[in-house]
Length: 65
Image (cartoon, rainbow, N blue to C red; front, side, top):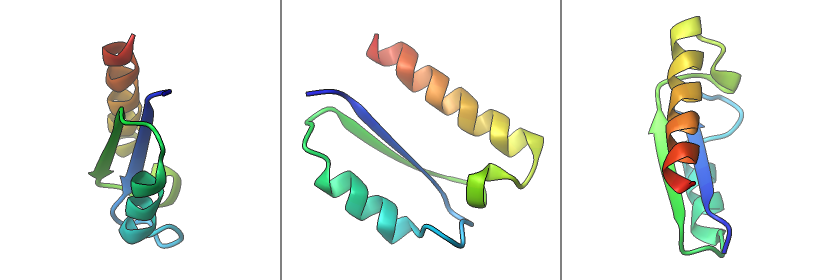
């Protein structure tokens, strides 16, 4: 019953979008979101990419409160 968020960097070379989709599909909660966003592994591309990912997570958490 706990909400879940899966965030996937589209340029990640270790975890692929298809992996994130499998994780998302197998979550047992009805309240779940999947976001495929720009970014590589750990969103280490740039500060902007990391900030965008962090803002997405913060906004999602705030919306679930």
